[in-house]
Length: 248
Image (tube, rainbow, N blue to C red):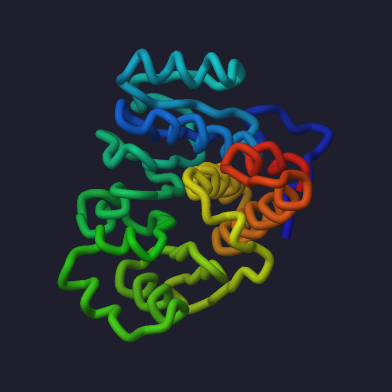
């Protein structure tokens, strides 16, 4: 499991274009971290979608290679992230879609998705509440693997259930359990990095790569970065993990 091997003929468009819609006035850091994660994946071109000029300026001042956009219609795009810190997007093309945080609730709405669209959700246990209280009750007494498999089957999505031994599950019941990541990943913003990385990896679906393998690779790279950060630094935050992502 690794990033796509670059070809001598590749350009930024052939590598893939990911749109990140994340962050808010309350959670500006979510925009920076998710974009940071996206920059460490397969994509050669990252666009940041926001109606907020202030948020866009914040992102571009940190990452001058990222292109800010305020409209999605007409944009060239191969994968999209909605959330963290943002819960909706007015127009979603039929490309692989990653939903994090409150945006996970969109899978309960039929109008969110196009037919056969690949959707990946990245909740931790606490974010399962976005699936609804009654549905949450149906998950009681299930193991983490059973929860991930049930959600994947019920909503026809790929589930990345974050936590100790992150679980990736598909509607056809394939499962990957991460054995690399440790407690160093349990820090604010770590999941934002992962969401951006997952979306960036998914741009390679256009080359007929398996979305399950791409999602699992993102989890593995994220965990490797956490382990490396724990070796390099006495204290690990999302920023140390971000620093290590391009090194794994």
